[in-house]
Image (cartoon, rainbow, N blue to C red):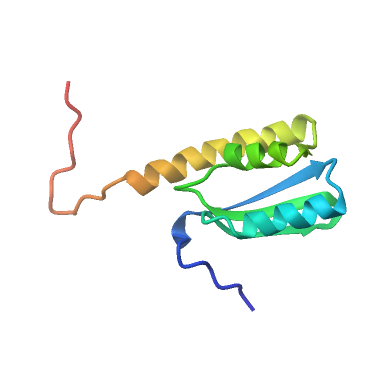
Length: 118
């Protein structure tokens, strides 16, 4: 069974992020997940095994950097390492593409495509 999305979420622009968080206690996890699930841009957040945070959010209004700020504000930190840095770089790249696609106005087949001005 699939989970129903929030009404405020734009389904084509939903992004799913998995981050391993260190230094969170059980009570911090519960409060953090509760806060994320009530955030207007977050569609769904959950804690998985090995302290992995899985978040689905609207990429047009929120970003991984804002998620990292939330984690740091609650006293947590992302697991360090080459792979974590690589994933964060990929997440940022795809978020830039999602924002660009959300702003793009498609043109019709019978119209001349917009030209760059010199």
